[in-house]
Image 1 (cartoon, rainbow, N blue to C red):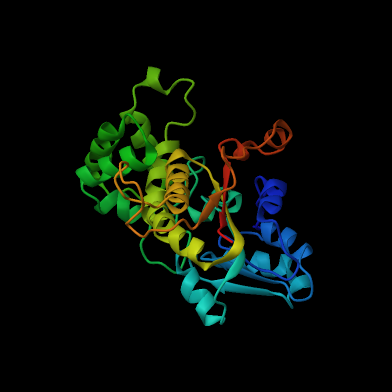
Image 2 (tube, rainbow, N blue to C red; image 1 turned 90 degrees about the horizontal axis):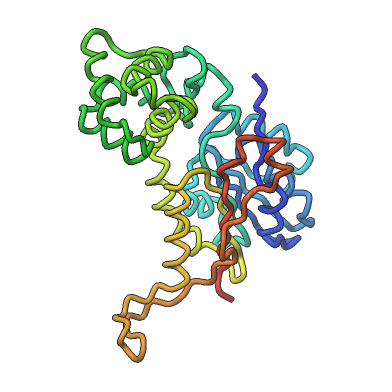
Length: 312
């Protein structure tokens, strides 16, 4: 299957990076290379792009897509949480911009073999990095009822989390749950029929929750933002596209904290904590897709772009 993924908020994201022709840029979620290609088009002869992805299918597709710019592109199989060691290995101490397009790609969702989809019956997998050994099947069959409940409630924000966890545990006592189809039926049985009407696919939230837990998506994001801001050169920008409220909240809070890190009590006449602002938030409100983009790509619907600029 060809790696296809429509880059969301493409123009807005590229504009937000304020690209310098001779700058160094990092695409931390390379995917099919959509954002990277547009960055490359704007780079001069001394410009450089580093692409990072944990998915070998994405790396293969992006390498092909960016082949005309191979003299200025370096692609690394890694996770963006290791951006500091990736850049250190390339002898780079600071960059002019970083872009993250979070969540799951259209290719990963649509490729049945990857086991992300709830629309087909396929082995439960959901690994973004296929070299990792743990899969969604391990979570569904090995987590305790309490652990499943917390994952589904916290990462899926599903009001029926308790019941879904209970049904999963009951079903796996008969036999291991091995496919997305089996899990679908279990989730469906856990949600009353009248509650399933007009609310989208009943499995959507649980599948999202298991995927986030398996790939440690929120932990990775939370652990990466401060060091990314640290790696920016003066006036460098960090542009992040999120797809659900949990990611967006982490980004928003991190940007606020980096803009105003002072922890002194409000009554103090001067700051004594010594924590200095790292820069400013460029987007007072997140940038969201326009009607035209939404018509072309329904998956853009929940996307939000937030941008932070390093202090001069």
